[in-house]
Amino acid sequence: MLKVYINGNQIPLELPIGLPEIFNVVQHSDLIMKKSWVIRDVIIDGELLSDDQLKRKGSDFDLSGKSKIEFVLESQVQILANAINDGKIAGMLLSKKLIDIASELKTGATSTALHNLADVIDQMKYYFEYLKYLFNNGQEKFHSSLVNWPGQGDHILKILSQIINSQENADWVLLSDLLEYELAPQIEQISCILDLAMQRVENTMYS
Image (cartoon, rainbow, N blue to C red; front, side):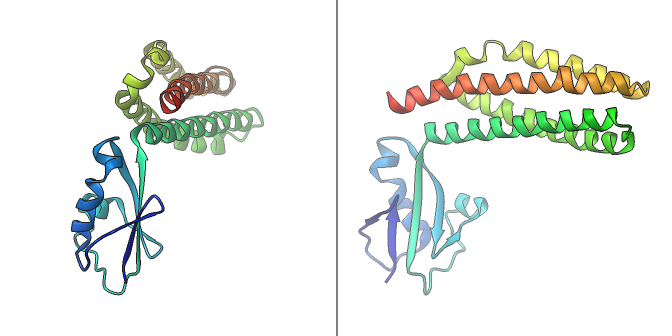
C-alpha cells in the first residue's frame, strides 16, 4: 500500500489517486498554506524527482507498484540560507583557483595557466549571475549586508579589464599579481558579504 510522508510524518490519503492529486493535497497542508514553505524534493521509493517533474507535479510518473512517497518541505528562508552557503563555497573555490593560476604563471607554466584562467573566467560569469539572482531574491532579508555590493562589482570589472590588457601585452608578472593580489581578495570579500547576509537570514530563522 502506498504511503505518503511530509517531512517524515505520514499523512492520511484516500487511495488510489495520481501523483498530481497527491501534490495538491501536500500544497494545501498547513506548512505551505500557513507558513509559506515550499516543496524542495519529492522522493518515490528512493528515486528523486527531477526539477522538470516537480514543475509538472509528476504528471507522467507511474505510481504502479510504488510503496512510499516522501515530500521534503523547507521554509523559503532555509532555502535562501542554503543558497547563500552554496555561494560562499563557490567563491572560496574560485579564489583558490585564481591563486593556483598565479602560481602557474610564476613557475613558467604559461600555457596551462592561460587555459585554466579561461575556464575560471567562464565559471565567474555563472558565479556572478548566481549572486545577482541570489541578491535580487533575498534583498529584503539582508538588504543592509549589500551596501557595498555595487562598488564591489564595479571594482571587479576594472580588475578584469586590467587582466585582459595584461594578457594582450603578455605581461605574465602583472597578470599573476592581478589574479593573486587583486581579484582573489575581491572574491574573498564577497564571501564576507555573504557571511553578513547569512547572519541576517539566521536571525530571521530563529527570531
